[in-house]
Amino acid sequence: MRQIHRSMVAAWIAVFLFTTMTQGAEPIDIGSRRELFVDHHLIGSLDDVRLVLHRPEPREIVFRFDQPWEGLYSGYETVLQDGETYRFYYRGMPEAKHDLDTEVTCVAESKDGIHWTRPKLGIYEVHGTKANNVVLARNRGCHNLAPFIDTNPDCPANQRYKALGGTGSPGLLAFASADGLNWKQLQADPVITKGAFDSQNNAFWSASEQQYVCYFRVFREGTRWIARTTSKDFIHWSEPIDLELGGQPREHLYTNQFDPYVRAPHIYLGLPTRYLPGRRVLTDDEARRIGTPTKWNYVNDCTDILLASARGGDNFQRTFMEAFVRPGEDLQNWTSRANYAARGIVQTGSRELSLYVKHHSGYPSNHVRRYVIRADGFASVQAPYAGGEFITKPFIFSGEKLSLNFATSAVGGLFVEIQTADEKPIEGFSHQDCRELIGDRIDQTVTWKHGTDVSRLAGKPIRLRIVMKDADLYSLQFSGSD
Image (cartoon, rainbow, N blue to C red; front, side, top):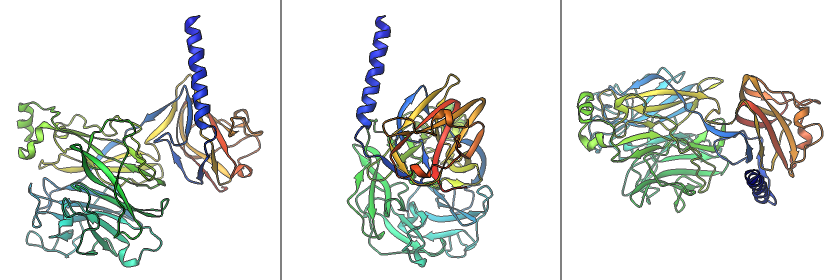
């Protein structure tokens, strides 16, 4: 009896805390934006369901750094899509030294994100030839140039591509290009000066914040960390702020790779490399056998890759502390700086996203492997066979229908109930009125007894209650009619 009593008290406290935290809070305005479950932004309560991280699946090696101007220490990649063309920017660095004659910025191109070619641009002569794919040379920005396509509606055509690059003092330089191939430095002086900058420093135009945003490298208490600054014109930047820890341990985050997620640009997804100095895996015999570089003592460290998210300001979420990409069985991925995700997650199919990871850094086999994951499939609310449910926080939306990205087993399914902000089912939209959702769908419209139209509820504070069995829910979105 005492155990039953304690369970009842615990349940009452949970209900009380949930009610206290959500009552009086302004409803979240999600408009018609797609919402993913990479954080707890929309989640009010979970009952016998849980948030689950889904790791991407490794696919083919798509690129090897085997040209004379590339080599063992090539890296700091950016992948983006411009119309029907994918572009892959990276640093060429054949020797373990940082100088104007060693580091260059290169580009490769693809029509499918899988097969890449090096255009012979003829812009710079390096290693005795202009028949190369170098887009920037003999410039301090080559160490880590991180291009992006500027979606600011006021951006002039000759600056449609932008980038930041540079390391250490005096700071980051600003660059622009009309075509992504011919780059010009915008001014002699650096535009951001307060930081370490010794990895990729990622800027982009944020449509949700209506300003340029840059996530960049700093050191705090001897640990590699991430700071953020903003700008209205890409030249004048605000005082930097550190991303918040949120009670989590400070770990070395070697890169950040933040970028607006292609299917929900108000959510910035990051793929930071977690660096563990002094955590050695290989024996001396293993290190000799695979030819581990002696430069920078590569054998003594290891890395993996995390999934992080942000929604502007100092918001920073590592909802999952577990690795998103593990080093795997390959011993050459268990030495220092061996696992780096490229900046940029691109859609390469209606159901498929591709991301790219550099492996074997410092080895002659230095290469990039493609990984794939389901569209929106980074994380899900997952229900077991026994079933469960979750309730959202109060929110308001715009649109005429609700669609879900979900997967179930043959025995599993989902039912959606629309509630008032105080958790009362709305007539005609109870879970009993909902047609069961079964299958594996990227974009399935929810249907109730009287149809799919939810427009009469638009702009009003509501909650969703989703009853689930042996199912994963990856994302939801309100939008116009079919």
